[in-house]
Length: 322
Image (cartoon, rainbow, N blue to C red; front, top):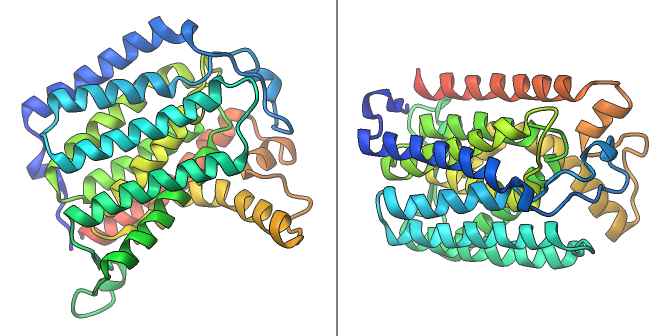
């Protein structure tokens, strides 16, 4: 069983630093939003006209602030410093795409995502155990179930996880407030079950940086985080799953991301490479299906998707802590 961190909360210093992250992000986001590139609208996206012309790429603000203040306030560690570099790189590749008049090709973005995923995976495997603790499976056995993964195999699997996280979370970012709200719910769950206290400090700071951005992105949004935000969130969420000792927990804790964004990726992959068409009458990501074919409002999509993710996360927390 895992013990909640209620009796091991971060120090006052880290708590104060996290509040500073929120305040600085909140203030600078409001000040700098007019400096951001403008959204040009996404082809075939539902309600794309509502986003057209809004400041886009706000991820460059909250991710940059998080990285800088993490270097200044969070417990220093060479491993975490490398993660911040890759997180910043993920943000910058997304921002350059956001700011480009011609959107980057899927292949170009895929290769950059792969490089980020490989670098992050190698760093993690070099500084952490490659043993996976199957926490949910262990609930049904008399002894804890774990498996030591060879270094190279772990790097490959971690690369797949990070690449998948980047892309499913990016695909979910299509409704005001949806991606960030889901990320906050999922990251808070990882905070509760992660026993590495130093990394929890980073998680709390990242959560508050996203919360400050969400203030402006709540429907009707004043700005959009773009790929600059969603790709960085994907990297961080995958790291959070790996740091809790059981990367497989990414599946239930981020299940709405996986279903909403992942189905569309599978649909495109099968059609592009195998000429196989599935779910022809279903719009993807599924939040577009809900809005266009089910007549859900943006608020209903965010609320209902968040409730589903919250319920799954509550079940995971209860199973792992009681």
